[in-house]
Image (cartoon, rainbow over all chains, first blue to last red):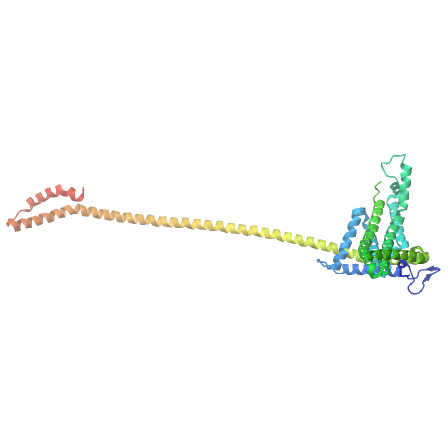
Length: 244
Length: 196
């Protein structure tokens, strides 16, 4: 059982079964790590913003650097019009980042390794961005599917491709994060299993791989959170500033 | 030999793991919809609360902190700038006062010098005047003496020559003949003594 690399992704109930009507909304290990990540974010940023000293201490510096990092990212990709959505993108980035990072601790559960979680986030972003686009530009938002400077003959094809690519955004966004997380953790588990099964004689090679993979996975955890946030910014940019 | 064992063991364990994988895995747990609703529910709740708390309380505080720091720093820079300007102005004032006092001192010096020179001149003039008067007085006295001197000398000469003649030859010579001789001689020698 323990050697199954997919075992770590299993969701199980913690505490009693909670039912809303006929729907099961029990508190699970996934819920637990969502709560832990959120609490950790709130704790860090609460302590990081409580005292305002001219020379910030470490936690204040951390929170202010994250703030300026995300704010710069939004400003660079989506421009100044995206300022009202800063809080959302900041929360999103931090949530995904903390979930990814908590997943790197042994025996924890990686919330973002579940397609349903990433898909709900991506779908919410997709719907939100589409609504923003139609509210800002009305039906003119449909011009997004008609790139300028395309020969009229190719136009129907291009429009179809554009629409497909637009509709596949939530899928690509969610699958990217989910697959990265799942693949990384599965690999680490597989190599961990090798270490055990090869024992003291041959276990050193997979162990060294495991160590290297841990570093890589921490990088991936940050990178995927960043990619998730920056793609959100790019979609938002399409909705706010219609370029085509 | 050891290498062979190592490779074999790696290969065998790989096979074993794959076998175990195949036997135990019932597909990906991610695709089991049993807890999907629960995950969606808890995701909505936790992320919603996180978003509300961050956007309402924490992020405004951070941006406020950043802004106050920025404004404080710029204020401090401004204050420093102002103080620098003030000090520069004061330095200029100080230099000006020093220059003024220097000029004043110069003028005082000049004035007092002129005054002293004037005083000295006045005193010198008066001294010169006194001196020239004295010199004139002395000159007149000398002139008087000079004028009187030949007569006196003549008189003495006449008397001495009269006494001499009486002593030598016992004859009384009258004054007029002796004085005629003396006058004649003194007139001859006057230029020799006085340079007239």
